[in-house]
Length: 270
Ligand SMILES: [Zn+2]
Image 1 (cartoon, rainbow, N blue to C red):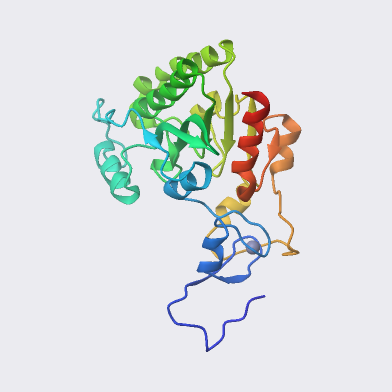
Image 2 (cartoon, rainbow, N blue to C red):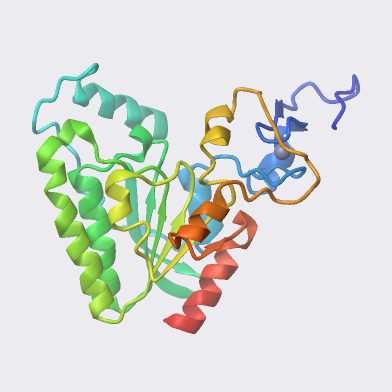
């Protein structure tokens, strides 16, 4: 257990790990890919950091960025959809829940997309799914592997049947890539993909998941200070066994090893 000392500089932020309850300096967690150095709990990771983790520095070129979501149905729920979008864009700095484009992964060109769980819980509307479709299309035409990182991904209710109509279109693009012999590597991160995201997140030629992604109890307790776990220094693959047992996921991979694992798979399969 880390001990708070009077001599610690006052500008260091401390926090309690939601898994093992250890009190840790924020800097130590951030430097370790947002992973608890004590128990291996994988903290949520933002979009920019996720890109930096997996893609070669400066290689990412966004595609379909000009596609912008509008409130075509003028949806009024607890909050107006238009206002939800404005707030999400302000909070994340992104225009949509999916950021798609092309980049390099250990020198190899890839078509890549990141479903951002911080943007309206990673929910998918028309534009988000069109951007994902673009990744599969570019992977097919450019004969590149497709790498999609997904957290969240339920159907965005505010787009109703209009958004739902994009699901078969997205599934068809994924199928076309498969029929062409292309490679799709799916990386599943918290929050566990549900709903619309299930049409593609679990349909990779290889599906990888980060440790703890399927642990709803841990997901709920994250950030509330009520931790659990033995803190024995091993990675806790909580919930991952269930994903492996059902065949939804092929391997649980620690965040620090993800890039090397993706590169290794592309070397064997692409
Ligand atoms: Zn921990």
